[in-house]
Length: 543
Image (cartoon, rainbow, N blue to C red; front, side, top):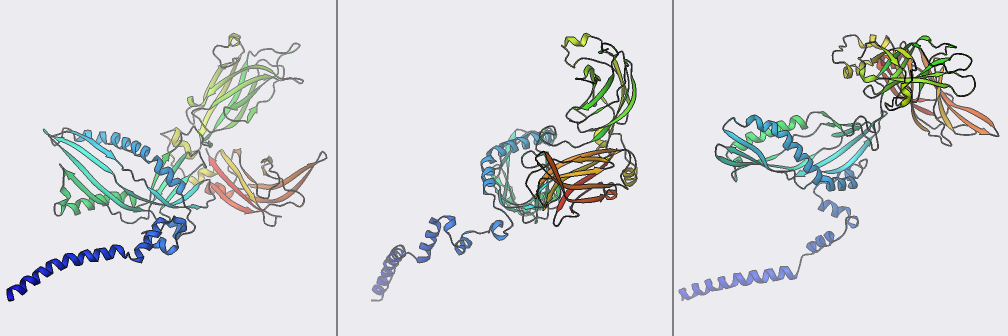
């Protein structure tokens, strides 16, 4: 009986266990738990229909635009990055390959290495994602963005090395599960917006210590599995990445060429002395010509004129002029001579040009130029003698731009003394005004009065918040340390042939701070205005 009982017990246990598992599995499938049904319902719903508690359960990391309301969502930009990522991957890998060729060439022939090349190189198909963007306000002419960037890359890199007669592959397995740049970690400074950028500066800093899972396969085997080697390589790679990632770094990236789209800024001044002219054409019937010279720079609307020399075919002027230069590599000084007429149009006598790129900074150069009818080499009128003109031209760059044009220029002087001496350029930019209101009308424009010279912006109709962003230039022989510039916002209206003007407020600014500091960029409360404010950018450049 003992044997039979043992046999029956074993048989019952063997049969009961499968039957129990089968019945349990059937009950589990038939009576599905409610929380599983709830999760399935959640997944089938759209994101907008989900409750906040469900979103918290689904998302492992909350996006920054949800935790910080001042961050904006940029789904459209992420879509753009996702669509452009294959092309960026191709371009970036091409740059990496071309840059690595010089490094590989240094090792070929050494250590018995015959060839080194990338057998496979790609950054993967996972594009970075921006979780949020925050725009920062600034008085400067720039756009500052705080980005929250995350990238889980799946780069695939295979490096082939031929050593003696044996060729093997090295495959770095770099896994970046989560690179995060939190609030304030990533800023983009763009000088010109919204579309044409001269350059962008990327400032990267304040991050955490990077964590990189680094693998290295040789001939199909991962040598990082060797005890102790993984930690040594991991520390070296993390340290090299930290040098680029942790400390504040500034990267200048040229988006457009300097000659395209970007607004040109003054870089210096040319001093032109119109000395004399001789053997000019006689355009008058009963008397000789009354010549004068018109000077201008290509790309500029403003021009300057000499005095008129009455009844003189060999005039001498000895007059000096100063003109602002923005592009010394491409701009040309144009000299046009005319015969002054009291009635009617002035008769044309001839012209000549002086390219600025042939000038050496700080070096005065004399030109004796034969006058021509035009600069067209096929113009038949150029064969006719028109006389000659003599000019002295000197290009003097601003101190801050001197190194661009003269490598031997050495600035050893005191910057404060330099700002107080010599010729300089005062740049006044009237950016905008806010809350300016007249008693009867609001067509605001701004007037600038400095040393008796008066300039004004365009008039903007029917607004209390005009935006001008107009720049005015004053070439001065000495620093305006004791000068005051007067800026006033006016409004005018024409009715029945009469113009009615009204002052909306003014401000007087002492320029001493501009001279000592180089520039000011501030908003000033207008005097005689209740809430009016004007935004001015004033800069002083010394040559």
